[in-house]
Length: 406
Image 1 (tube, one colour):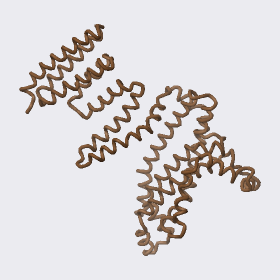
Image 2 (image 1 turned 120 degrees about the horizontal axis):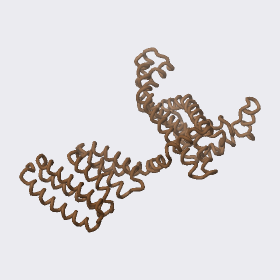
Image 3 (image 1 turned 180 degrees about the vertical axis):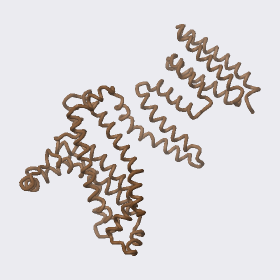
Image 4 (image 1 turned 90 degrees about the vertical axis):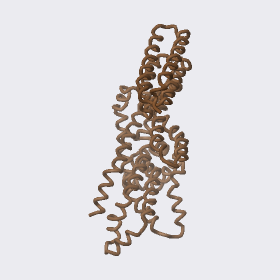
């Protein structure tokens, strides 16, 4: 039943309620300007109610009035911020016809009123959850999964909240000054160069290792399989000490490299790359192993039965099929390498990489000086990660797809 018959009565009742609320607000906020704002907002809400009366069911009009009453009570009485009603009241009335968009407005209102210090971060995280839930909630027999997702999202929100809060702690001018400092630019270049070299080295040796682990069966395989993940379990400082003991200037291997090749591991780019390889290699190896195990040896056997040599089969069949997982592992390896700090502080404090540079600035000058450099690093790494993910889904997949077809 539409609201044409009942809506006039409901609107009259609503008008009386709004008049009573406005009269009570007069006693609480005698300021003429504030009262004028509330009067204009109430009038606009009333006018929109008249417009909705001809097209909405009666119950939706009831909920329209109830929703505005709650909004009015929260902002005017509870939060004692009547001027906020001048923003959210008209938006509520205008967006009531589109409930999905209205949900974002209510999230914004809740965040501004109840969590003012972190309103932006709360809006971003809760809106992301709301956008996903709105899409998946209509799916049948998935209500438990929706609830599980919403509950688990608390963990993701807790991880992202510090990053979102940090990103807004410096002005663009301060970030620009920090990003253009010569020592920061040098540290950033060192980070990108060493992490890229480390990732390429892990690719060169890690993919063959992963392939062999996926295809071969031998005694002790489970032990080696466990050792692949060992760098993840070892504390970063212990990793730096271990490499320094093996390749440091007083170690036989370190003396050999220095005397015969002029290479010094500690305090050099070589030390940075060694530490990055140590801590980041499990991500690519494990990702490639999972891909090779899932695809199975069937297509390889077909390729070899047609006369293709093993190397050709590996490059033209195995790698194209596993390219997505390998590229994802490479992204994680690169990200882990560029963020390494603990091992480098022991093995190669200088030349600076950006994480070590940020820590050095923090220890020397405090949090205020370290914050801009950390924000710039966060932005740079975020965009680099986005670009790599885009390459993983488009460029790499298309290249290997053509390779497999040819």
